[in-house]
Length: 545
Ligand SMILES: [Zn+2]
Image (cartoon, rainbow, N blue to C red):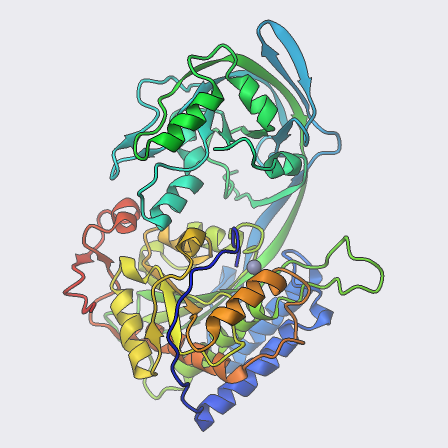
């Protein structure tokens, strides 16, 4: 899981958890065994591309084999090798700006942040800037900040954020798509300036650091829009100087943005130009997605696939630990717990007397903590026909620290999966609660979103705030999340793991057995954007309460 900030709204209500059955005890024991192995120090934090990750991947493949799944990776293997590239600088790039006829030198990592490139080894160019307001182009909401502006060969400068009043997941989607909008308008670079001058310059400080992305055999990369050469940021002082001689100062733009809720500040050409000379160093490596398949039983539906997936990677080893300090990011809950519960869901599928009607794919993802990279690569290069993937369940960071009695189902509101989750929860005495932290936009921040962007209805279940959950979430996100303390010293509630596995199994089973495939709801923003020609139904017809 990759979260933004840690801020919470209060949610109340508590219910008593039912006592576990013997089936649940067996599942709980196996979840424990798997988490204890995957989160052990010997796997060294399962960093993408590391030996520890590969051992974890081999383990998941052997579990898939034991359960009776078929390999569904590359060439009949369990693995889809994701081609990763690490780009870094041996020497920091030379950056200068010409402002008012004067050439001024900028230091990378302090005045500006220019990321290394995974697609252009040498960059040697001079370009001008165009301010593009929020830099949004979206038909549904009628935004076109590029209208009337010529971006060919230019660097787009956008104000951070989006007009207020948008649903939080739409806002997050738009916010993460800005460099794509800029590239589509012909820009070769993209800069986002902050909405207020007091914010820290973390993006600038990160500028010179290595980046990891996937780069496929055609040279396409996961997070670089075609034609985009410069991903830039500026310190506040330099961001303000970009607007020297412009029709409006950055200060005035920021004031306008605060005062008006819907209409973004209008765009215009900026006076300064930038010159960049940058040489990136590349190291290529692979790390696998682990893919297993349970063939469906219905001759008419077995060609369709429902996907269950969980990310297997975590953050590796801390490089700045003091001697004697715990340096291993074990990732017990993030996300050994998700992988272990996915394996148990697979076992449930294989153990039933009747196989599901549709086929099921089980995927352990790599590169999630590095930017949802493995899932994105798979979604763009699936090992089954892309159109055959009809729905997806993502298991990420179940907080197995208390007997949860409710869940939040991210993404469920957009499709018929919402009704499926409600029904499956009801069958187990688990209720579905509204998102307790909409500002995190979790729908767009985990692996399942990479499939949503390919038009696949998807859901991610978060264990809820009821029955003491809020306190556990506050404490976990406050202290443990993405720290070496997310390890086996936590008081893990293994029975909660069994319930999480069974609930996800029931949801996926209903998706696999349904007379109709999961469908986007009529008029849904994400369905209309990413799967405009797919089947639709109304909320009422989907059985949504
Ligand atoms: Zn994480």
